[in-house]
Length: 382
Ligand code: HEM
Image (cartoon, rainbow, N blue to C red; front, side, top):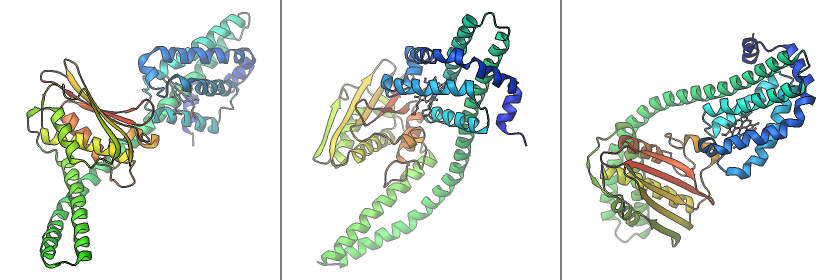
């Protein structure tokens, strides 16, 4: 049966003759690979959106140029077999993992196309095979683009399958959560009755405390799960984020080694929203930040606003988000915590979106995580 790579080669018309032309032209073009890699990344760094995809900034460019030069050698030398396809898919998946928008690929590929074409035109004007070689380069670059887009599609399909699974599991989990409320209620009232009977039995009292704590935890999980699934109707009232932050701060147990700093939160203008649900967003984000910090570090809450929206950034100096889950951070059941089932951020996203806003994750300069909630002001768009 024809493989996907064979089908793609057939589609762009890439055959053995093209491979032979690419190998022939390799000694001519390879001395220019370093310069092409320089231009490639210069163009990316000149564009604010594309530059953002580089994350760690310019310090990574040196290493990336080396991988791009290797990539160009492979492009011209092949062999263009299934192992080649797999290697190229792996590169594509790296781009997907860092959420590199697909449309940047075309411009980037055109830099390579344009430069190889220019070198060829300058050095091989008398070569009758110029046109055929140019066509071979076009074909292999089209193939590369096709493979890159294939990995994006692969990712999209996996995402869709995940969503379908989640919606079935979500409904099931919601139903189970709902059913668990009753037995938990019975345990709670029995524990209450027992507490009146244990007298001064210290150990029994301790166990009842534990039962109480675990019941609280179980109830919190069920409440979050049901909130996520049910979409509680939004109440609309005047909300001051500074009040929410203060009230959450009061309710959290902050370890002595953790410094909490607020910056620009008090002057934030009021917005219209559901105070209970928005408080939950602030609470989840501040709690996550504290969990990430452990016993020591810095938690900063920074407020900013413009005419259209307010932004509340909650950042911690902890280890930062695990790159393996960065892209799926706001999906239910995705968590980086040892103890946690991964509902908190999904709920934050849901609540922010229902308020016409957003929540996003950013890498904090100097290490750690930053989550930014953006909510529209009355009459504005986030
Ligand atoms: C013609 C298009 C492109 C080619 C051929 C290409 C090639 C590559 C290669 C070979 C790698 C190394 C993969 C690995 O580690 O196995 C890579 C990684 C990477 N590329 Fe590209 N790239 C292209 C477009 C872009 C663009 C447009 C950007 C940014 C705007 C970009 C950003 C990155 C980053 C940030 C990584 C490293 C990701 C990581 O390791 O975390 N690439 N690319």
